[in-house]
Length: 120
Length: 110
Image (tube, rainbow over all chains, first blue to last red):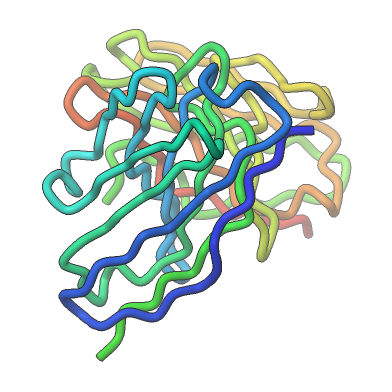
């Protein structure tokens, strides 16, 4: 079955960077995109971006352009999301998800989430 | 404020029908982009409920249905059950904002 397992919780200081990993299994990794979504405490979902493990093509949310990088390692079926210059409002649960066969930006299977806390 | 507007909350008694609206604009839903819906139970990751306006992934009960018209879309839950109490989010694509979610709607079963 499709599984996405994310790395553990992180606590970072303002201005630092965080890298969250997402290991996929149960399907052909390069066939579907990986989407990243975040959710601040008590708030709604925010689409962060998408990466194609097939060719590395990315599409980032305008709001995060310049601070976010998404990469994949096809040898280990793992996706990574790197967020730089962290601020307190980056505190959130970060989810990776596998894309849908019909829509690159639709999240069909989700990881368990990684809590990132930004605090001085 | 989200580009896709949803009511903050809706409620209904068990067995009733409730609908959740998702109002967009000419740069997203009105531009022909499809609408998708997610259910998020408390303390869990979201789950894809409807894709491509009205297609249910395997395992999603047929009590859930979606529709789209013009610049808006709706999710309907018929025969409301206690287990349907959750947050619901619509999603579409925007020509300048890429993937985007609505603000979310909390469904309460009375």
